Image 1: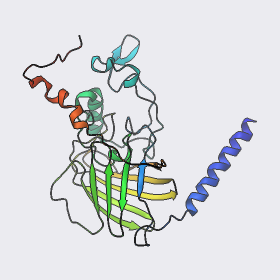
Image 2 (image 1 turned 90 degrees about the vertical axis):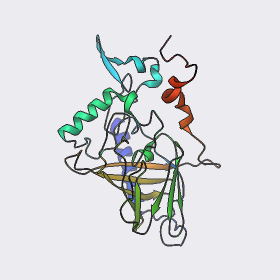
Image 3 (image 1 turned 30 degrees about the horizontal axis):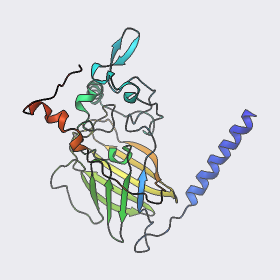
Image 4 (image 1 turned 90 degrees about the horizontal axis):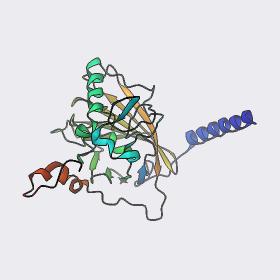
Length: 281
């Protein structure tokens, strides 16, 4: 019986893959390129850690008497602060860090709550904005593409004609797009080195280039890939890959998550005229 179930599962996967390869998306505005308008969302644990990982007590731990335990700063989050397991989205499994890059990653992880830009509501950058646990929306016209993210109200324009080099670095970078068949390819440069890939401390330098690929695979999902190049941090280019799912509610839309106001007390509360207590009572 187990063999039969396994066989059926394999055949279903093969059938789905074949159908996906043959899928021809409806044409979008202008009638040439596929229509990728819509509200999309990743359903995975990549924002915790883009590499394969087991569940753990917290996003920041210390050595306990019988193994790792939450640090004082994460202890009172309880199960809410635990890390769910994940199969990872890095093609090949491991990020090819240089020795220095890996050491910094481990240092970041050990100081997560003080260093992760997400904690302070800084914009997530690319590719992290794509797999934050909140939806984003693609607006596509005949000759332009615009992306808006529910997290922190982040936005970016994808320039479909060569915009040249980024005039300045920014949190969300400088996006230049083109169509390769039915795949939207976006090259992103000019990002601050302050953004991370996830809550596990995975990081990059300001020399990073991200090449994204959005490919319609069915009416309900896009295949997303992003290739990372950064010779200051990694020994070779590497790629993440995941499906993005269309939000299918009748009233699917982005809502407001203006998290800046949620961290004002964390960042500036000590300078109140009458500061509130900042230690656990």
